[in-house]
Image (cartoon, rainbow, N blue to C red):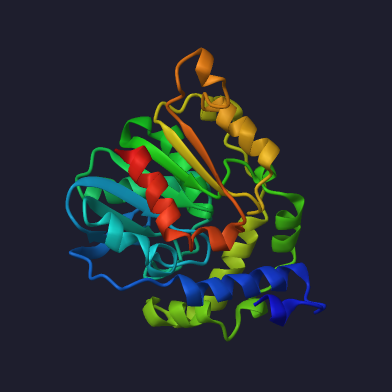
Amino acid sequence: MKRVLKGSNVSKPVLIIAMLFFAVFQSRGQQSNPSGSGYVPVNGIKVYYEVYGEGRPIVLLHGAFYTIEMNWGKLIPELSKTRKVIAIELQGHGHTPLSDRKLDFATLASDVEGVMDHLKIDSADVAGYSMGGSVAYQLAIKSPKRVTKLVIISSTYKSSGWMPEVTNAFKNLKPEFLTNTPMKAAYDAVAPDKTKWTKFLEQMIAFAGVPFNMGETNIAKITSPVLLISGDNDGLDKVELIKTYQLLGGAVCADFGAMPKSQLAIVPSQGHVSLMMQTKTILGYLDGFLK
């Protein structure tokens, strides 16, 4: 990958997308068959979900443009050995149909809660990656009793939590950058209407361009223990990440007091995409935190 891109004049948005496609090829794990799947009518749309395994429930929320398999393909077989895994595809993603309904994190979090209601899950651990992490933050803020423990992977509760390079890249992102890609092939494989691809991209690009901030006060009020996982070079502003950890009660000298209930893990030599490929590392953190 480095040899292909080295010395090229590829623009930053195209470079990010190229890395994303590379990860799609590399990150797919051994396929598992869900014990249950279906659609839940909620907030005017039908949200698709899959269930794996038995045990204490954990809800998985994918990143932007991803499907369940792309994001969690390697983790689900391991997590489902001891847990009931509920993986959800958000509006327009994967099996979940595109809707003209405006995208916002509060509505997406309400969709997740609707799926939990349908499955009769009063509370669960919730893990979200990238966009899914922001949805998970919103769920913990809106419905704190539904979230037992919260895992946020390479994500933020405000748009300024990303480095400017990331924000600027998405401002220049065009639907044609995603034409003839593995991501398009994955969409075509499961989407209920393949003709909605371009409209889906346009909706997502517009959504990514809208600044958001869920509020420091709301983050500080989160009662669930939170595990923050970040790559050391994943596009998150690390100053803002430490501030977030402080809001959650972390970044203290535990030698002089109690260890915080929340945790922060910075994985070395990892970007935003490559971080999700570190299956053993992420599983190790999850096993320790979710016990």
